[in-house]
Image 1 (cartoon, rainbow, N blue to C red):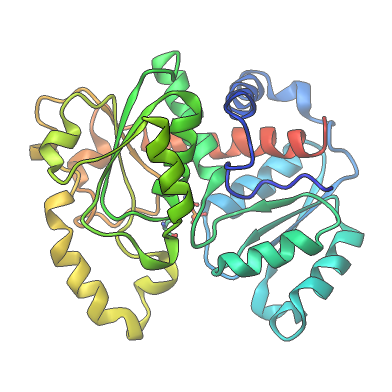
Image 2 (image 1 turned 90 degrees about the vertical axis):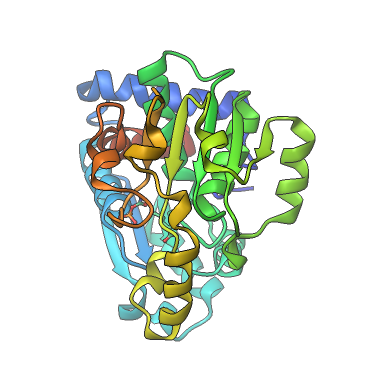
Length: 305
Ligand code: CP
Ligand code: NVA
């Protein structure tokens, strides 16, 4: 069985914690790792746009001594052929595959046919690479993770799902403050499990959610492939109105010392204001940087290095 990195559900708390610690160690001493993946190739395939995921994996692979290839799905024959066939072929050329696909079922088809480790670079339901970099950032700032309280404001989605899983496995309290969930992201089995752990809570009032939180996290209310889609314009308009009370801003954060987090790209003036982006407690750009160090930890783990 090939080991993949798809949701974090398949990893134990101990394994997640060790990835986070490895990311911190690599960041402190990057030279130690500069030849570890010499001669190895990561093939990255994207159906959606990306800044952080694409650049951090590509730079990360270069800094580990390996090579990364970027593929735009529409410019390959994945667009017209069977996903399993094309994945098998890419596996024969590559040591690792990273994919950012719109549909979770397509990612799962790819996982079944991949002959080398597959990394989920974001799908409809999960964003595991993001959350390793995020929790690495929290650990750097706070020293430890166990017992911390994280409040997530906005829409339930791929990012909040992955945070839910990671927090429960690491003994952190996760509070979802969201009037709705993005329908393709709903994972009822995971939610049932998260509730059973005692680490998952829901709170409708943003003020109550933020009070006592050690970390306040937000993400876009509209997933990237829909943000400029004319067919989604009406729903986008509705969401921008519905979700305004959940905006992370100066007024909401008054009196709070919580770390402010956002996975980016941010839509300033919607889920977050300029003040919160640049606030003294904002660690948003450290999160983005830590994608680089934590992606390296993920690739090394998958290649047993
Ligand atoms: N946070 C994140 O995954 O960013 P990109 O979509 O730019 O890769
Ligand atoms: N949840 C958003 C942002 C992820 C980086 C999306 O899926 O587009």
